[in-house]
Image (cartoon, rainbow, N blue to C red; front, side):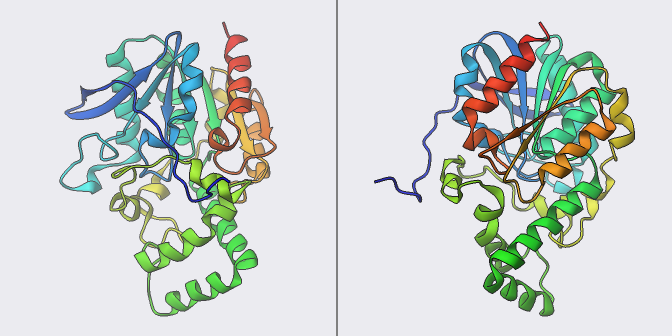
Length: 305
Protein backbone atom coordinates (compact mmCIF):
# COMPACT_ATOMS: atom_id res chain seq x y z
CA UNK A 1 0.00 0.00 0.00
CA UNK A 2 1.36 3.44 -0.93
CA UNK A 3 2.08 5.97 1.79
CA UNK A 4 0.69 9.41 0.84
CA UNK A 5 3.07 10.98 3.38
CA UNK A 6 6.20 9.44 1.85
CA UNK A 7 8.72 11.84 0.33
CA UNK A 8 10.18 11.38 -3.12
CA UNK A 9 13.84 10.41 -3.47
CA UNK A 10 16.16 12.14 -5.92
CA UNK A 11 19.83 12.55 -6.74
CA UNK A 12 21.41 15.85 -7.71
CA UNK A 13 23.25 15.88 -11.05
CA UNK A 14 26.82 17.14 -11.07
CA UNK A 15 26.94 20.82 -10.21
CA UNK A 16 29.30 23.73 -9.71
CA UNK A 17 29.37 27.41 -8.83
CA UNK A 18 29.54 30.11 -11.51
CA UNK A 19 30.66 33.61 -10.67
CA UNK A 20 28.30 36.14 -12.25
CA UNK A 21 27.86 39.80 -11.39
CA UNK A 22 29.88 39.46 -8.20
CA UNK A 23 28.02 36.50 -6.72
CA UNK A 24 28.18 32.71 -7.02
CA UNK A 25 25.21 30.87 -8.49
CA UNK A 26 24.85 27.12 -8.07
CA UNK A 27 24.22 25.33 -11.38
CA UNK A 28 23.61 21.65 -12.13
CA UNK A 29 23.55 20.14 -15.62
CA UNK A 30 22.66 16.77 -17.08
CA UNK A 31 22.05 15.33 -20.53
CA UNK A 32 23.07 16.23 -24.04
CA UNK A 33 21.31 18.06 -26.83
CA UNK A 34 19.72 21.47 -27.18
CA UNK A 35 20.06 23.41 -23.91
CA UNK A 36 17.04 23.99 -21.68
CA UNK A 37 17.25 26.20 -18.60
CA UNK A 38 14.69 25.65 -15.84
CA UNK A 39 13.59 28.68 -13.81
CA UNK A 40 11.74 27.75 -10.64
CA UNK A 41 8.85 29.06 -8.61
CA UNK A 42 7.35 28.60 -5.13
CA UNK A 43 6.94 32.35 -5.30
CA UNK A 44 10.35 33.99 -5.62
CA UNK A 45 11.84 31.90 -2.81
CA UNK A 46 12.22 28.36 -4.20
CA UNK A 47 15.33 26.55 -5.36
CA UNK A 48 15.77 24.30 -8.40
CA UNK A 49 14.98 21.23 -6.27
CA UNK A 50 11.29 21.30 -7.24
CA UNK A 51 12.34 20.02 -10.69
CA UNK A 52 14.08 16.89 -9.33
CA UNK A 53 13.83 14.04 -10.23
CA UNK A 54 11.10 14.64 -12.79
CA UNK A 55 13.26 16.23 -15.50
CA UNK A 56 15.74 13.35 -15.51
CA UNK A 57 13.83 11.69 -18.34
CA UNK A 58 14.00 14.84 -20.48
CA UNK A 59 17.80 14.78 -20.12
CA UNK A 60 17.83 11.74 -22.41
CA UNK A 61 17.76 14.05 -25.42
CA UNK A 62 18.19 17.60 -24.03
CA UNK A 63 20.81 19.36 -21.93
CA UNK A 64 18.96 20.34 -18.77
CA UNK A 65 20.30 23.27 -16.75
CA UNK A 66 19.13 23.77 -13.17
CA UNK A 67 19.98 27.04 -11.41
CA UNK A 68 19.52 28.42 -7.91
CA UNK A 69 18.90 32.14 -8.02
CA UNK A 70 20.88 34.46 -5.76
CA UNK A 71 19.84 33.92 -2.15
CA UNK A 72 18.07 30.63 -2.90
CA UNK A 73 19.15 27.03 -2.52
CA UNK A 74 22.91 26.54 -2.66
CA UNK A 75 23.74 29.89 -4.27
CA UNK A 76 25.37 32.72 -2.35
CA UNK A 77 23.08 34.99 -0.35
CA UNK A 78 23.55 38.68 0.46
CA UNK A 79 23.80 39.89 4.04
CA UNK A 80 20.74 42.01 3.30
CA UNK A 81 18.07 40.04 1.42
CA UNK A 82 16.52 43.34 0.31
CA UNK A 83 19.29 43.43 -2.31
CA UNK A 84 17.41 40.72 -4.22
CA UNK A 85 15.05 42.22 -6.79
CA UNK A 86 13.20 40.99 -9.84
CA UNK A 87 15.50 43.00 -12.09
CA UNK A 88 18.60 41.57 -10.41
CA UNK A 89 17.27 38.03 -10.86
CA UNK A 90 16.75 38.67 -14.58
CA UNK A 91 20.22 40.20 -14.95
CA UNK A 92 21.80 37.26 -13.09
CA UNK A 93 20.18 34.65 -15.35
CA UNK A 94 21.16 36.61 -18.46
CA UNK A 95 24.75 36.89 -17.22
CA UNK A 96 24.82 33.18 -16.42
CA UNK A 97 23.58 32.23 -19.89
CA UNK A 98 26.22 34.48 -21.46
CA UNK A 99 28.90 32.85 -19.31
CA UNK A 100 27.75 29.34 -20.23
CA UNK A 101 28.13 30.37 -23.88
CA UNK A 102 25.50 27.93 -25.17
CA UNK A 103 23.98 30.15 -27.82
CA UNK A 104 20.21 30.48 -27.62
CA UNK A 105 18.44 28.25 -25.10
CA UNK A 106 14.93 27.01 -24.49
CA UNK A 107 13.64 28.69 -21.34
CA UNK A 108 11.19 26.77 -19.12
CA UNK A 109 9.68 29.19 -16.65
CA UNK A 110 7.52 27.76 -13.89
CA UNK A 111 5.42 30.18 -11.78
CA UNK A 112 7.74 33.06 -10.80
CA UNK A 113 10.26 31.62 -13.24
CA UNK A 114 7.83 32.36 -16.06
CA UNK A 115 7.98 36.05 -15.23
CA UNK A 116 11.78 35.88 -15.44
CA UNK A 117 11.46 34.05 -18.74
CA UNK A 118 9.30 36.79 -20.23
CA UNK A 119 11.76 39.46 -19.13
CA UNK A 120 14.64 37.49 -20.66
CA UNK A 121 12.88 37.17 -24.01
CA UNK A 122 12.04 40.87 -24.08
CA UNK A 123 15.33 42.30 -22.77
CA UNK A 124 17.84 39.64 -23.91
CA UNK A 125 16.33 38.12 -27.07
CA UNK A 126 19.75 37.00 -28.32
CA UNK A 127 19.87 34.45 -25.50
CA UNK A 128 16.44 32.84 -25.94
CA UNK A 129 15.35 30.15 -28.44
CA UNK A 130 11.84 29.62 -27.08
CA UNK A 131 9.66 30.23 -24.02
CA UNK A 132 7.61 27.70 -22.07
CA UNK A 133 5.41 29.55 -19.56
CA UNK A 134 4.11 26.92 -17.17
CA UNK A 135 1.45 27.70 -14.54
CA UNK A 136 2.81 31.20 -14.65
CA UNK A 137 1.76 34.85 -14.56
CA UNK A 138 1.92 37.91 -16.80
CA UNK A 139 1.58 40.76 -14.28
CA UNK A 140 1.39 41.81 -10.62
CA UNK A 141 -2.37 42.00 -11.11
CA UNK A 142 -2.43 38.29 -11.97
CA UNK A 143 -0.32 37.56 -8.87
CA UNK A 144 -2.95 39.31 -6.75
CA UNK A 145 -5.72 37.31 -8.42
CA UNK A 146 -3.76 34.14 -7.69
CA UNK A 147 -4.03 34.82 -3.95
CA UNK A 148 -7.66 35.90 -4.17
CA UNK A 149 -8.45 32.57 -5.85
CA UNK A 150 -6.57 30.59 -3.23
CA UNK A 151 -8.37 32.40 -0.43
CA UNK A 152 -11.77 31.78 -1.99
CA UNK A 153 -11.02 28.07 -2.39
CA UNK A 154 -9.88 27.71 1.21
CA UNK A 155 -12.92 29.64 2.45
CA UNK A 156 -15.28 27.43 0.43
CA UNK A 157 -13.61 24.05 0.87
CA UNK A 158 -11.98 24.43 4.29
CA UNK A 159 -14.27 26.80 6.21
CA UNK A 160 -12.91 25.67 9.57
CA UNK A 161 -9.39 26.65 8.45
CA UNK A 162 -10.58 29.94 6.97
CA UNK A 163 -12.31 30.83 10.23
CA UNK A 164 -9.00 30.44 12.09
CA UNK A 165 -7.24 32.58 9.49
CA UNK A 166 -9.82 35.32 9.93
CA UNK A 167 -9.45 35.16 13.71
CA UNK A 168 -5.69 35.65 13.43
CA UNK A 169 -6.24 38.59 11.05
CA UNK A 170 -8.41 40.31 13.63
CA UNK A 171 -5.50 39.86 16.04
CA UNK A 172 -3.26 41.75 13.60
CA UNK A 173 -1.12 38.89 12.32
CA UNK A 174 0.13 39.25 8.72
CA UNK A 175 -0.35 36.31 6.37
CA UNK A 176 3.36 35.43 6.41
CA UNK A 177 3.35 34.91 10.18
CA UNK A 178 4.24 31.25 10.89
CA UNK A 179 0.86 30.63 12.52
CA UNK A 180 -0.90 31.91 9.40
CA UNK A 181 1.36 30.03 7.03
CA UNK A 182 0.64 26.78 8.83
CA UNK A 183 -3.07 27.34 8.24
CA UNK A 184 -2.63 28.30 4.58
CA UNK A 185 -0.52 25.17 4.11
CA UNK A 186 -3.49 23.08 5.24
CA UNK A 187 -5.34 24.09 2.10
CA UNK A 188 -2.37 24.08 -0.27
CA UNK A 189 -2.67 20.44 -1.34
CA UNK A 190 -6.33 20.93 -2.24
CA UNK A 191 -5.72 24.16 -4.15
CA UNK A 192 -2.47 23.23 -5.89
CA UNK A 193 -2.89 19.58 -6.90
CA UNK A 194 -5.29 17.50 -8.99
CA UNK A 195 -4.72 14.70 -6.48
CA UNK A 196 -3.70 16.06 -3.05
CA UNK A 197 -1.64 12.91 -2.44
CA UNK A 198 0.65 13.99 -5.29
CA UNK A 199 2.06 16.70 -3.04
CA UNK A 200 4.43 14.03 -1.75
CA UNK A 201 6.01 13.94 -5.23
CA UNK A 202 7.28 17.50 -4.85
CA UNK A 203 10.92 17.20 -3.87
CA UNK A 204 12.42 19.25 -1.09
CA UNK A 205 15.50 19.43 1.11
CA UNK A 206 16.87 21.75 3.81
CA UNK A 207 17.32 25.21 2.31
CA UNK A 208 15.08 24.51 -0.69
CA UNK A 209 12.98 27.56 0.12
CA UNK A 210 14.15 30.87 1.58
CA UNK A 211 11.42 31.65 4.06
CA UNK A 212 13.09 34.91 5.13
CA UNK A 213 13.13 36.23 1.56
CA UNK A 214 9.46 35.55 0.85
CA UNK A 215 7.87 38.33 2.98
CA UNK A 216 10.61 40.80 2.05
CA UNK A 217 10.05 40.21 -1.65
CA UNK A 218 6.27 39.78 -1.71
CA UNK A 219 5.14 41.79 1.32
CA UNK A 220 4.37 40.48 4.78
CA UNK A 221 0.63 40.27 4.05
CA UNK A 222 1.02 38.91 0.49
CA UNK A 223 -1.82 36.41 0.76
CA UNK A 224 -4.16 39.40 0.86
CA UNK A 225 -2.19 42.32 -0.62
CA UNK A 226 0.96 42.08 -2.75
CA UNK A 227 3.63 44.73 -2.18
CA UNK A 228 7.39 45.28 -2.23
CA UNK A 229 9.23 43.68 -5.18
CA UNK A 230 6.22 41.77 -6.53
CA UNK A 231 4.30 45.00 -7.02
CA UNK A 232 7.25 46.37 -9.03
CA UNK A 233 7.38 43.48 -11.51
CA UNK A 234 6.52 44.77 -15.00
CA UNK A 235 3.12 44.15 -16.53
CA UNK A 236 4.22 42.09 -19.51
CA UNK A 237 0.84 42.04 -21.24
CA UNK A 238 1.46 44.98 -23.62
CA UNK A 239 4.94 43.63 -24.45
CA UNK A 240 4.10 40.01 -25.23
CA UNK A 241 2.94 40.67 -28.79
CA UNK A 242 6.49 41.79 -29.58
CA UNK A 243 8.20 38.64 -28.32
CA UNK A 244 9.86 37.20 -31.40
CA UNK A 245 10.55 33.66 -30.14
CA UNK A 246 7.93 30.89 -30.05
CA UNK A 247 5.86 30.76 -26.86
CA UNK A 248 4.25 27.72 -25.26
CA UNK A 249 1.75 28.16 -22.41
CA UNK A 250 0.90 25.19 -20.18
CA UNK A 251 -1.96 25.27 -17.67
CA UNK A 252 -3.27 22.71 -15.19
CA UNK A 253 -6.98 21.96 -15.50
CA UNK A 254 -7.23 21.72 -11.70
CA UNK A 255 -5.00 24.69 -10.85
CA UNK A 256 -7.36 26.49 -8.50
CA UNK A 257 -4.98 29.41 -7.98
CA UNK A 258 -3.96 30.31 -11.54
CA UNK A 259 -7.09 29.04 -13.27
CA UNK A 260 -6.83 27.91 -16.91
CA UNK A 261 -8.95 30.96 -17.75
CA UNK A 262 -6.18 33.18 -16.37
CA UNK A 263 -3.53 31.22 -18.28
CA UNK A 264 -5.61 31.53 -21.44
CA UNK A 265 -5.25 35.32 -21.18
CA UNK A 266 -1.70 34.92 -22.49
CA UNK A 267 -3.22 34.26 -25.93
CA UNK A 268 -5.00 37.61 -25.87
CA UNK A 269 -1.68 39.43 -25.50
CA UNK A 270 0.51 36.92 -27.35
CA UNK A 271 -1.72 35.56 -30.14
CA UNK A 272 1.33 33.80 -31.56
CA UNK A 273 1.50 31.55 -28.46
CA UNK A 274 0.54 27.89 -28.30
CA UNK A 275 -1.73 26.80 -25.43
CA UNK A 276 -2.17 23.38 -23.79
CA UNK A 277 -4.09 22.21 -20.74
CA UNK A 278 -2.87 19.30 -18.60
CA UNK A 279 -6.06 17.43 -17.75
CA UNK A 280 -4.90 15.79 -14.52
CA UNK A 281 -2.74 18.54 -13.07
CA UNK A 282 -3.01 21.39 -10.65
CA UNK A 283 -0.22 23.97 -10.30
CA UNK A 284 2.60 21.41 -10.64
CA UNK A 285 2.07 19.72 -13.99
CA UNK A 286 5.71 18.54 -14.18
CA UNK A 287 5.03 16.62 -10.94
CA UNK A 288 1.56 15.24 -11.68
CA UNK A 289 1.84 14.61 -15.44
CA UNK A 290 5.53 14.66 -16.35
CA UNK A 291 5.17 12.32 -19.34
CA UNK A 292 2.52 14.51 -20.95
CA UNK A 293 4.43 17.71 -20.20
CA UNK A 294 7.57 16.30 -21.79
CA UNK A 295 5.63 14.98 -24.79
CA UNK A 296 4.29 18.49 -25.43
CA UNK A 297 7.70 20.08 -24.90
CA UNK A 298 9.48 17.66 -27.21
CA UNK A 299 6.88 18.20 -29.93
CA UNK A 300 7.10 21.98 -29.52
CA UNK A 301 10.89 22.09 -29.60
CA UNK A 302 11.28 19.62 -32.47
CA UNK A 303 9.07 21.81 -34.64
CA UNK A 304 11.57 24.62 -34.09
CA UNK A 305 14.56 22.61 -35.30
